[in-house]
Image (cartoon, rainbow, N blue to C red; front, side, top):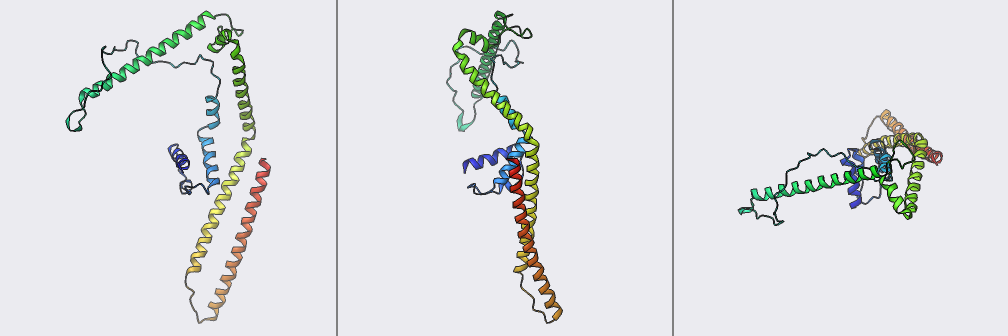
Length: 260
């Protein structure tokens, strides 16, 4: 139940507003096609596969963010302790407590900025000391991973496994791109079938409501004849509905075979 609620919340957060999905039972006993539609929507809207490839990409160690902080950050007053000032009376927030939180935040920000600068300095040293060692003259220097392999060659097997895994993912992504038009064509048939079934359910509900209405007793022969014709027409419509259900199931099975 928690997983189903989490999935619904995540889809709602990303902007998926199809009401049929949020009306599904919480036990997961129904709604496989609704989940398929939601997954296809995420696949098209957010680019899930591209994000997975970017996240699982083998890091070379040279990645760094551009820091836009000011060079001279104000120093935090030395001698401050980690004791939290007491709040005022009647559960009011003391101004000194807010000042303490602000000072602690500035101290953490300054530490992060210093670590970022140290990382950039070390990265520059590696590039400077390995200048001219790379086979590709465009780079002209070794990366952090390559420098680590030069010092510890036994880590080459682990890096090779990571590269093989990334290569398999890229090959699977290329295969998906080749078959992607077939998938979206199949999804169009799924949408059409769901629309047809929705219309059938609406017509069936209308027929049920009409059957629940009390029959009028008429003394006119032509009225009885008209009632009989309407009943025969209703039976013909029900037969046609069953045939359409069978046709939809046959088309769905045929498309599944084509996709496989």
